[in-house]
Length: 462
View (cartoon, rainbow, N blue to C red):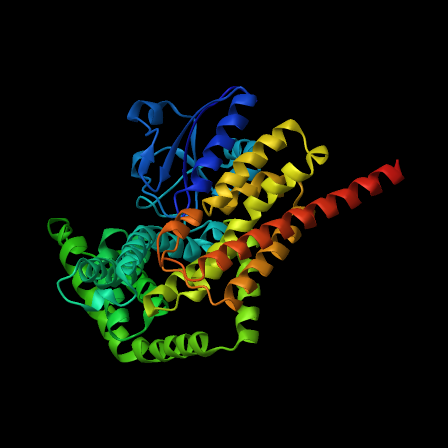
Protein backbone atom coordinates (compact mmCIF):
# COMPACT_ATOMS: atom_id res chain seq x y z
CA UNK A 1 0.00 0.00 0.00
CA UNK A 2 1.29 3.47 -0.97
CA UNK A 3 1.94 5.92 1.91
CA UNK A 4 -1.25 7.77 2.75
CA UNK A 5 -2.09 11.09 4.35
CA UNK A 6 -4.75 10.30 6.96
CA UNK A 7 -6.70 12.43 9.39
CA UNK A 8 -8.92 11.04 12.15
CA UNK A 9 -11.24 12.05 14.95
CA UNK A 10 -11.76 10.02 18.12
CA UNK A 11 -14.54 10.58 20.66
CA UNK A 12 -16.07 8.36 23.34
CA UNK A 13 -19.05 9.09 25.62
CA UNK A 14 -17.01 10.12 28.65
CA UNK A 15 -14.23 11.72 26.64
CA UNK A 16 -11.61 10.24 28.94
CA UNK A 17 -10.03 6.88 28.16
CA UNK A 18 -11.20 5.41 24.84
CA UNK A 19 -10.83 8.78 23.10
CA UNK A 20 -7.10 9.00 23.73
CA UNK A 21 -6.26 5.28 23.66
CA UNK A 22 -7.90 4.92 20.24
CA UNK A 23 -5.99 7.96 18.98
CA UNK A 24 -2.70 6.50 20.15
CA UNK A 25 -3.45 3.11 18.58
CA UNK A 26 -4.25 4.71 15.21
CA UNK A 27 -1.08 6.79 15.33
CA UNK A 28 1.10 3.78 16.10
CA UNK A 29 -0.51 1.58 13.42
CA UNK A 30 -0.29 4.30 10.76
CA UNK A 31 3.34 5.06 11.54
CA UNK A 32 4.27 1.36 11.36
CA UNK A 33 2.71 1.20 7.88
CA UNK A 34 4.57 4.31 6.72
CA UNK A 35 1.47 6.53 6.61
CA UNK A 36 1.19 10.10 7.83
CA UNK A 37 -1.64 10.68 10.30
CA UNK A 38 -3.00 13.36 12.58
CA UNK A 39 -5.74 12.58 15.09
CA UNK A 40 -8.06 15.14 16.66
CA UNK A 41 -9.26 13.96 20.08
CA UNK A 42 -12.64 15.29 21.09
CA UNK A 43 -12.42 14.58 24.79
CA UNK A 44 -14.03 15.90 27.94
CA UNK A 45 -12.00 19.13 27.77
CA UNK A 46 -12.72 19.82 24.11
CA UNK A 47 -10.79 19.23 20.91
CA UNK A 48 -7.11 18.33 21.19
CA UNK A 49 -4.65 18.47 18.26
CA UNK A 50 -7.32 20.29 16.28
CA UNK A 51 -7.22 19.68 12.55
CA UNK A 52 -6.58 22.69 10.35
CA UNK A 53 -8.31 23.44 7.07
CA UNK A 54 -5.03 22.77 5.23
CA UNK A 55 -4.58 19.36 6.86
CA UNK A 56 -8.16 18.39 6.03
CA UNK A 57 -7.76 19.48 2.42
CA UNK A 58 -4.54 17.48 2.01
CA UNK A 59 -5.90 14.26 3.55
CA UNK A 60 -6.69 11.20 1.45
CA UNK A 61 -9.56 10.25 3.77
CA UNK A 62 -10.98 10.72 7.26
CA UNK A 63 -11.41 8.08 9.96
CA UNK A 64 -14.16 8.86 12.45
CA UNK A 65 -13.59 6.53 15.42
CA UNK A 66 -16.48 7.87 17.46
CA UNK A 67 -19.10 6.49 19.84
CA UNK A 68 -21.08 9.73 19.88
CA UNK A 69 -22.29 12.01 17.13
CA UNK A 70 -19.76 14.65 16.10
CA UNK A 71 -19.92 17.60 13.75
CA UNK A 72 -18.49 16.60 10.36
CA UNK A 73 -19.19 19.84 8.48
CA UNK A 74 -15.46 20.50 8.17
CA UNK A 75 -15.08 17.25 6.21
CA UNK A 76 -17.62 18.07 3.50
CA UNK A 77 -16.54 16.43 0.25
CA UNK A 78 -13.92 14.21 1.91
CA UNK A 79 -14.04 10.41 1.97
CA UNK A 80 -15.07 9.30 5.45
CA UNK A 81 -14.89 5.93 7.20
CA UNK A 82 -16.79 5.46 10.46
CA UNK A 83 -15.98 3.00 13.22
CA UNK A 84 -16.03 2.85 17.01
CA UNK A 85 -13.25 3.84 19.39
CA UNK A 86 -13.12 0.25 20.64
CA UNK A 87 -12.58 -1.08 17.14
CA UNK A 88 -9.88 1.51 16.46
CA UNK A 89 -8.18 0.60 19.71
CA UNK A 90 -8.19 -3.16 19.19
CA UNK A 91 -7.79 -3.36 15.40
CA UNK A 92 -6.12 -0.10 14.41
CA UNK A 93 -4.15 -1.52 11.47
CA UNK A 94 -7.23 -3.28 10.10
CA UNK A 95 -9.30 -0.09 10.46
CA UNK A 96 -6.76 1.88 8.44
CA UNK A 97 -6.62 -0.74 5.68
CA UNK A 98 -10.41 -0.97 5.51
CA UNK A 99 -10.80 2.81 5.54
CA UNK A 100 -8.44 3.15 2.59
CA UNK A 101 -10.80 1.12 0.39
CA UNK A 102 -14.24 1.68 1.96
CA UNK A 103 -14.25 5.37 2.92
CA UNK A 104 -16.96 7.26 1.05
CA UNK A 105 -18.15 10.82 0.62
CA UNK A 106 -21.20 11.19 2.85
CA UNK A 107 -24.38 12.85 1.75
CA UNK A 108 -26.71 14.97 3.85
CA UNK A 109 -26.22 17.30 6.76
CA UNK A 110 -23.20 17.40 9.02
CA UNK A 111 -23.04 14.70 11.58
CA UNK A 112 -25.60 12.45 9.89
CA UNK A 113 -24.75 8.95 8.75
CA UNK A 114 -25.57 7.71 5.26
CA UNK A 115 -29.08 6.33 5.26
CA UNK A 116 -28.06 3.47 3.02
CA UNK A 117 -25.50 2.14 5.50
CA UNK A 118 -27.63 -0.36 7.40
CA UNK A 119 -24.86 -1.44 9.75
CA UNK A 120 -24.16 2.10 10.89
CA UNK A 121 -27.85 2.97 11.09
CA UNK A 122 -28.47 0.11 13.50
CA UNK A 123 -26.08 1.63 16.01
CA UNK A 124 -27.62 5.12 15.66
CA UNK A 125 -29.87 4.93 18.73
CA UNK A 126 -26.98 3.88 20.94
CA UNK A 127 -24.81 6.71 19.62
CA UNK A 128 -27.56 9.24 20.28
CA UNK A 129 -28.02 7.95 23.84
CA UNK A 130 -24.28 8.07 24.51
CA UNK A 131 -24.11 11.60 23.13
CA UNK A 132 -26.71 12.64 25.70
CA UNK A 133 -24.85 10.82 28.46
CA UNK A 134 -21.53 12.44 27.50
CA UNK A 135 -22.99 15.95 27.85
CA UNK A 136 -24.86 15.01 31.04
CA UNK A 137 -21.85 13.56 32.88
CA UNK A 138 -20.00 16.81 33.70
CA UNK A 139 -23.22 18.23 35.17
CA UNK A 140 -23.81 15.14 37.31
CA UNK A 141 -20.20 14.82 38.45
CA UNK A 142 -19.99 18.49 39.44
CA UNK A 143 -23.36 18.35 41.17
CA UNK A 144 -22.57 15.14 43.03
CA UNK A 145 -19.25 16.41 44.33
CA UNK A 146 -20.77 19.72 45.46
CA UNK A 147 -23.54 17.84 47.29
CA UNK A 148 -20.86 15.73 48.93
CA UNK A 149 -19.07 18.89 50.05
CA UNK A 150 -22.26 20.09 51.73
CA UNK A 151 -22.26 16.90 53.83
CA UNK A 152 -18.86 17.83 55.29
CA UNK A 153 -20.79 20.08 57.69
CA UNK A 154 -23.14 17.23 58.64
CA UNK A 155 -25.64 15.02 56.85
CA UNK A 156 -28.55 17.40 57.55
CA UNK A 157 -26.64 20.67 57.87
CA UNK A 158 -28.03 21.86 54.51
CA UNK A 159 -31.50 22.15 56.03
CA UNK A 160 -30.48 25.26 57.97
CA UNK A 161 -31.13 28.22 55.69
CA UNK A 162 -28.39 30.75 55.09
CA UNK A 163 -25.52 28.36 55.83
CA UNK A 164 -22.73 27.39 53.46
CA UNK A 165 -24.03 23.81 53.54
CA UNK A 166 -27.43 25.03 52.32
CA UNK A 167 -25.78 27.05 49.54
CA UNK A 168 -23.76 24.05 48.41
CA UNK A 169 -26.88 21.88 48.35
CA UNK A 170 -28.70 24.52 46.31
CA UNK A 171 -25.87 24.57 43.77
CA UNK A 172 -25.37 20.80 43.59
CA UNK A 173 -28.82 19.37 44.21
CA UNK A 174 -31.16 22.23 43.39
CA UNK A 175 -29.38 23.37 40.24
CA UNK A 176 -26.86 20.87 38.82
CA UNK A 177 -28.94 17.76 39.47
CA UNK A 178 -32.06 19.59 38.24
CA UNK A 179 -30.31 20.06 34.89
CA UNK A 180 -29.28 16.42 34.63
CA UNK A 181 -32.35 15.00 32.85
CA UNK A 182 -33.01 18.05 30.61
CA UNK A 183 -29.38 17.97 29.41
CA UNK A 184 -29.60 14.22 28.78
CA UNK A 185 -32.80 14.59 26.75
CA UNK A 186 -31.67 17.77 25.01
CA UNK A 187 -28.44 16.31 23.68
CA UNK A 188 -30.03 13.02 22.65
CA UNK A 189 -32.35 15.14 20.50
CA UNK A 190 -29.44 17.33 19.37
CA UNK A 191 -27.54 14.23 18.26
CA UNK A 192 -30.51 13.14 16.15
CA UNK A 193 -31.72 16.42 14.66
CA UNK A 194 -28.89 18.89 15.31
CA UNK A 195 -29.89 22.35 16.61
CA UNK A 196 -33.63 22.10 15.81
CA UNK A 197 -33.85 19.18 18.26
CA UNK A 198 -32.21 20.92 21.22
CA UNK A 199 -35.12 23.07 22.43
CA UNK A 200 -37.78 20.32 22.31
CA UNK A 201 -35.33 17.89 23.90
CA UNK A 202 -34.53 20.24 26.79
CA UNK A 203 -38.20 20.99 27.39
CA UNK A 204 -39.13 17.31 27.16
CA UNK A 205 -36.42 16.46 29.67
CA UNK A 206 -37.64 19.15 32.06
CA UNK A 207 -41.16 17.76 31.79
CA UNK A 208 -39.83 14.25 32.44
CA UNK A 209 -38.33 15.57 35.69
CA UNK A 210 -41.46 17.48 36.72
CA UNK A 211 -43.83 14.52 36.18
CA UNK A 212 -41.50 12.13 38.00
CA UNK A 213 -40.51 10.09 34.94
CA UNK A 214 -36.83 10.34 35.86
CA UNK A 215 -33.97 9.42 33.58
CA UNK A 216 -36.09 6.85 31.71
CA UNK A 217 -38.54 9.60 30.84
CA UNK A 218 -35.64 11.83 29.82
CA UNK A 219 -34.38 9.20 27.41
CA UNK A 220 -37.86 8.77 25.92
CA UNK A 221 -38.31 12.55 25.65
CA UNK A 222 -34.97 12.92 23.90
CA UNK A 223 -35.82 10.37 21.23
CA UNK A 224 -39.35 11.74 20.72
CA UNK A 225 -38.04 15.29 20.38
CA UNK A 226 -35.10 14.32 18.19
CA UNK A 227 -36.89 12.12 15.71
CA UNK A 228 -39.87 14.48 15.69
CA UNK A 229 -37.68 17.48 14.89
CA UNK A 230 -35.76 15.53 12.25
CA UNK A 231 -38.99 14.46 10.57
CA UNK A 232 -40.19 18.07 10.50
CA UNK A 233 -36.89 19.29 9.04
CA UNK A 234 -37.06 16.66 6.29
CA UNK A 235 -40.77 17.07 5.62
CA UNK A 236 -41.54 20.79 5.73
CA UNK A 237 -40.77 22.48 2.42
CA UNK A 238 -40.63 26.27 2.27
CA UNK A 239 -39.61 28.88 -0.30
CA UNK A 240 -35.92 29.74 -0.09
CA UNK A 241 -36.77 33.18 1.29
CA UNK A 242 -38.45 31.54 4.31
CA UNK A 243 -36.13 28.55 4.72
CA UNK A 244 -34.15 30.27 7.49
CA UNK A 245 -37.28 30.32 9.67
CA UNK A 246 -37.48 26.53 9.74
CA UNK A 247 -34.62 25.67 12.15
CA UNK A 248 -35.10 28.62 14.53
CA UNK A 249 -38.88 29.09 14.61
CA UNK A 250 -41.11 26.53 12.92
CA UNK A 251 -39.41 23.23 13.84
CA UNK A 252 -38.54 24.11 17.47
CA UNK A 253 -42.06 25.47 18.04
CA UNK A 254 -43.92 22.47 16.62
CA UNK A 255 -41.51 19.86 17.98
CA UNK A 256 -41.51 21.40 21.47
CA UNK A 257 -45.31 21.61 21.51
CA UNK A 258 -45.80 18.02 20.33
CA UNK A 259 -43.07 16.61 22.59
CA UNK A 260 -44.54 18.44 25.58
CA UNK A 261 -48.06 17.21 24.94
CA UNK A 262 -46.88 13.62 24.43
CA UNK A 263 -44.87 13.73 27.67
CA UNK A 264 -47.77 15.16 29.68
CA UNK A 265 -50.69 13.16 28.28
CA UNK A 266 -49.18 9.90 26.97
CA UNK A 267 -45.66 9.01 28.11
CA UNK A 268 -45.20 10.81 31.42
CA UNK A 269 -47.68 8.83 33.52
CA UNK A 270 -46.66 5.26 32.55
CA UNK A 271 -42.92 6.00 32.63
CA UNK A 272 -43.32 7.75 35.98
CA UNK A 273 -45.06 4.64 37.35
CA UNK A 274 -42.23 2.45 36.06
CA UNK A 275 -39.62 4.77 37.57
CA UNK A 276 -41.40 4.92 40.92
CA UNK A 277 -41.71 1.14 40.97
CA UNK A 278 -38.03 0.73 40.18
CA UNK A 279 -37.03 3.24 42.85
CA UNK A 280 -39.28 1.61 45.47
CA UNK A 281 -37.89 -1.81 44.61
CA UNK A 282 -34.28 -0.66 44.89
CA UNK A 283 -34.88 1.14 48.17
CA UNK A 284 -36.78 -1.72 49.78
CA UNK A 285 -34.96 -4.74 48.38
CA UNK A 286 -33.56 -7.30 50.81
CA UNK A 287 -29.97 -8.42 51.01
CA UNK A 288 -30.50 -11.32 48.59
CA UNK A 289 -31.87 -9.03 45.86
CA UNK A 290 -29.12 -6.52 46.56
CA UNK A 291 -26.48 -9.19 46.05
CA UNK A 292 -28.05 -10.28 42.75
CA UNK A 293 -28.23 -6.68 41.49
CA UNK A 294 -24.64 -6.06 42.58
CA UNK A 295 -23.44 -9.19 40.78
CA UNK A 296 -25.25 -8.21 37.57
CA UNK A 297 -24.04 -4.60 37.58
CA UNK A 298 -20.51 -5.64 38.54
CA UNK A 299 -20.25 -8.24 35.79
CA UNK A 300 -21.67 -5.82 33.21
CA UNK A 301 -19.09 -3.18 34.13
CA UNK A 302 -16.27 -5.66 33.51
CA UNK A 303 -17.57 -7.44 30.42
CA UNK A 304 -16.46 -5.08 27.65
CA UNK A 305 -14.41 -2.47 29.58
CA UNK A 306 -16.05 0.74 28.44
CA UNK A 307 -18.15 -0.79 25.67
CA UNK A 308 -21.96 -0.79 25.30
CA UNK A 309 -22.64 -3.23 28.15
CA UNK A 310 -20.35 -1.31 30.51
CA UNK A 311 -21.99 1.99 29.52
CA UNK A 312 -25.49 0.52 30.02
CA UNK A 313 -24.66 -0.40 33.62
CA UNK A 314 -22.99 2.95 34.22
CA UNK A 315 -25.91 4.91 32.76
CA UNK A 316 -28.30 2.93 34.97
CA UNK A 317 -26.34 3.90 38.08
CA UNK A 318 -26.00 7.56 37.08
CA UNK A 319 -29.66 7.84 36.14
CA UNK A 320 -30.81 6.71 39.58
CA UNK A 321 -28.92 9.55 41.28
CA UNK A 322 -31.73 11.93 40.31
CA UNK A 323 -34.15 9.85 42.39
CA UNK A 324 -31.71 9.82 45.34
CA UNK A 325 -30.93 6.14 44.92
CA UNK A 326 -27.18 5.94 45.45
CA UNK A 327 -26.38 2.26 46.12
CA UNK A 328 -26.26 1.05 42.46
CA UNK A 329 -23.85 3.88 41.59
CA UNK A 330 -21.53 2.75 44.38
CA UNK A 331 -21.57 -0.83 43.08
CA UNK A 332 -20.97 0.33 39.52
CA UNK A 333 -17.93 2.45 40.32
CA UNK A 334 -16.39 -0.10 42.68
CA UNK A 335 -16.73 -2.89 40.13
CA UNK A 336 -15.50 -0.67 37.31
CA UNK A 337 -12.24 -0.04 39.17
CA UNK A 338 -11.34 -3.71 39.63
CA UNK A 339 -10.40 -4.82 36.06
CA UNK A 340 -7.58 -2.34 35.59
CA UNK A 341 -6.36 -2.61 39.20
CA UNK A 342 -6.56 -6.41 38.99
CA UNK A 343 -4.48 -6.56 35.81
CA UNK A 344 -1.91 -4.29 37.42
CA UNK A 345 -1.72 -6.59 40.44
CA UNK A 346 -1.43 -9.63 38.18
CA UNK A 347 1.65 -8.23 36.45
CA UNK A 348 3.18 -7.42 39.85
CA UNK A 349 2.56 -10.75 41.58
CA UNK A 350 3.04 -12.92 38.49
CA UNK A 351 6.03 -11.23 36.93
CA UNK A 352 7.28 -14.38 35.20
CA UNK A 353 4.12 -14.60 33.08
CA UNK A 354 4.50 -11.15 31.50
CA UNK A 355 6.90 -9.34 29.18
CA UNK A 356 8.60 -6.05 30.02
CA UNK A 357 6.08 -4.12 27.93
CA UNK A 358 3.22 -5.85 29.76
CA UNK A 359 4.76 -4.91 33.10
CA UNK A 360 4.77 -1.31 31.91
CA UNK A 361 1.15 -1.63 30.80
CA UNK A 362 0.32 -3.19 34.17
CA UNK A 363 1.64 -0.19 36.08
CA UNK A 364 -0.38 2.17 33.89
CA UNK A 365 -3.42 -0.08 34.26
CA UNK A 366 -3.19 0.01 38.06
CA UNK A 367 -3.16 3.82 38.12
CA UNK A 368 -6.04 4.05 35.64
CA UNK A 369 -8.05 1.60 37.74
CA UNK A 370 -7.61 3.76 40.82
CA UNK A 371 -9.08 6.62 38.77
CA UNK A 372 -12.12 4.49 37.74
CA UNK A 373 -10.91 4.06 34.17
CA UNK A 374 -11.57 0.39 33.51
CA UNK A 375 -10.20 0.76 29.96
CA UNK A 376 -6.73 0.36 31.47
CA UNK A 377 -7.28 -3.40 31.23
CA UNK A 378 -8.01 -3.28 27.48
CA UNK A 379 -4.43 -4.05 26.32
CA UNK A 380 -4.60 -7.31 28.29
CA UNK A 381 -8.14 -8.14 27.17
CA UNK A 382 -7.22 -7.53 23.53
CA UNK A 383 -4.29 -9.97 23.72
CA UNK A 384 -5.94 -12.66 25.87
CA UNK A 385 -9.73 -12.14 25.96
CA UNK A 386 -10.70 -15.71 26.85
CA UNK A 387 -8.84 -15.51 30.14
CA UNK A 388 -8.93 -11.79 30.96
CA UNK A 389 -12.65 -11.12 30.48
CA UNK A 390 -13.95 -14.00 32.67
CA UNK A 391 -11.41 -13.05 35.35
CA UNK A 392 -12.46 -9.40 35.36
CA UNK A 393 -16.16 -10.33 35.40
CA UNK A 394 -15.70 -12.61 38.43
CA UNK A 395 -13.80 -9.90 40.32
CA UNK A 396 -16.29 -7.21 39.34
CA UNK A 397 -19.30 -9.34 40.28
CA UNK A 398 -17.84 -10.02 43.73
CA UNK A 399 -17.08 -6.34 44.27
CA UNK A 400 -20.56 -5.29 43.14
CA UNK A 401 -22.17 -7.80 45.48
CA UNK A 402 -20.01 -6.71 48.43
CA UNK A 403 -20.78 -3.05 47.78
CA UNK A 404 -24.51 -3.74 47.87
CA UNK A 405 -24.26 -5.97 50.96
CA UNK A 406 -22.47 -3.32 53.04
CA UNK A 407 -25.01 -0.72 51.91
CA UNK A 408 -22.50 1.64 50.31
CA UNK A 409 -23.99 4.75 48.71
CA UNK A 410 -22.08 7.00 46.33
CA UNK A 411 -23.13 10.56 45.51
CA UNK A 412 -20.55 11.33 42.81
CA UNK A 413 -20.59 9.18 39.65
CA UNK A 414 -16.86 9.41 38.94
CA UNK A 415 -13.51 10.12 40.51
CA UNK A 416 -12.39 6.70 41.67
CA UNK A 417 -10.17 6.64 44.74
CA UNK A 418 -10.17 10.44 45.00
CA UNK A 419 -13.86 10.49 45.94
CA UNK A 420 -13.07 8.34 48.98
CA UNK A 421 -11.22 11.27 50.54
CA UNK A 422 -14.26 13.59 50.42
CA UNK A 423 -16.15 13.24 53.73
CA UNK A 424 -19.60 11.68 53.29
CA UNK A 425 -19.29 11.35 49.50
CA UNK A 426 -19.36 7.59 50.03
CA UNK A 427 -20.85 5.76 52.99
CA UNK A 428 -18.98 2.94 54.77
CA UNK A 429 -15.82 4.18 53.12
CA UNK A 430 -13.40 1.64 54.63
CA UNK A 431 -15.63 -1.35 53.86
CA UNK A 432 -16.14 0.09 50.38
CA UNK A 433 -12.40 0.37 49.80
CA UNK A 434 -12.10 -3.20 51.09
CA UNK A 435 -14.64 -4.47 48.56
CA UNK A 436 -12.64 -2.86 45.74
CA UNK A 437 -9.44 -4.43 47.05
CA UNK A 438 -11.03 -7.88 47.35
CA UNK A 439 -12.46 -7.75 43.84
CA UNK A 440 -9.13 -6.58 42.41
CA UNK A 441 -7.21 -9.37 44.14
CA UNK A 442 -9.77 -11.93 42.93
CA UNK A 443 -9.40 -10.61 39.37
CA UNK A 444 -5.62 -10.91 39.54
CA UNK A 445 -5.76 -14.38 41.15
CA UNK A 446 -8.24 -15.73 38.60
CA UNK A 447 -6.16 -14.48 35.70
CA UNK A 448 -2.89 -15.83 37.09
CA UNK A 449 -4.47 -19.24 37.72
CA UNK A 450 -5.91 -19.29 34.19
CA UNK A 451 -2.59 -18.17 32.74
CA UNK A 452 -0.70 -20.82 34.71
CA UNK A 453 -3.08 -23.58 33.56
CA UNK A 454 -2.76 -22.37 29.98
CA UNK A 455 1.01 -22.34 30.13
CA UNK A 456 1.07 -25.89 31.57
CA UNK A 457 -1.15 -27.04 28.74
CA UNK A 458 1.18 -25.50 26.17
CA UNK A 459 4.21 -27.13 27.83
CA UNK A 460 2.58 -30.58 27.91
CA UNK A 461 1.50 -30.26 24.28
CA UNK A 462 5.03 -29.38 23.29
